[in-house]
Length: 147
Image (cartoon, rainbow, N blue to C red):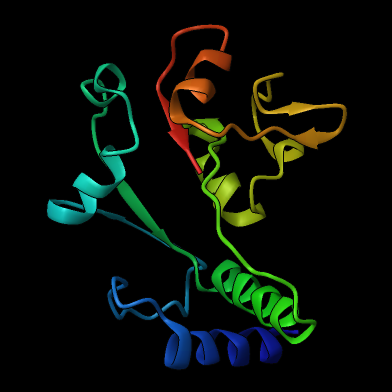
């Protein structure tokens, strides 16, 4: 299993790594959080209302080559079947304590330390079309992350 993981990791980082990712070894970690500034920071905040934008403390990019590789494989499968492939952004509120769980297990709410109805309903993860809708779904004021 470890050999397959490292082969896939190497393939993703060698041939499919997004230009915005920095080159770093993932030998002892599965993902990396990078605080972003400048144009990348501004592009993310454009999607937030001015009220919500004023409360954003920081913006991070998560570089997870394993999940990104799974995504690229799925896109390729759909293209080979001649399916239309398009991307949409959805938001999923998480508590700061669950950030590592989210990155390790791909938004699997069953592993969260404090799951709430804002995160799942009827055994399905819940995602929201806008950051504001995700924030409104959280019953108490809290520091949120979106994935």
